Length: 135
Image (cartoon, rainbow, N blue to C red; front, top):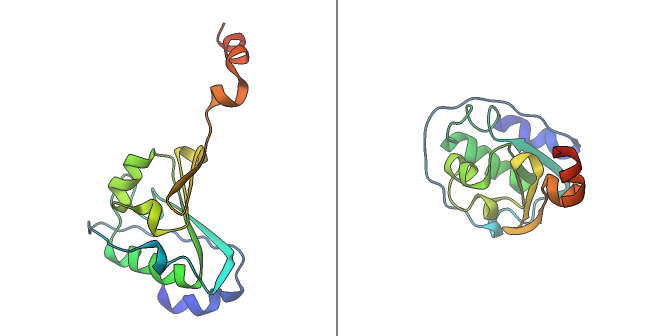
């Protein structure tokens, strides 16, 4: 994993998939990841099945990899679960560890630990259109 990091300077999209099985608590602040060498390159990593086994917890090796990668490029987290489940899987303060975090299949977005946007079907379509669909 790590030996390929030097080659990523020229990559524009990255896909990584690996399964791990242990639990660790992490402490890392945003200042450690906010100034990557190539900030215009963004890699988004899915939680279940990529950063963790499905519904599992991240390992030390995977978090170390993500931390190392975040020094090279901008890293973000994407998952289908809500934020409390992502916190359970990735550790407290995950929205502060990496600049971008998207939960609920991208409906809730955080940037640098602050809520950026939240979208729902009813908010997007409007109450009147929802009533037309439901009725």
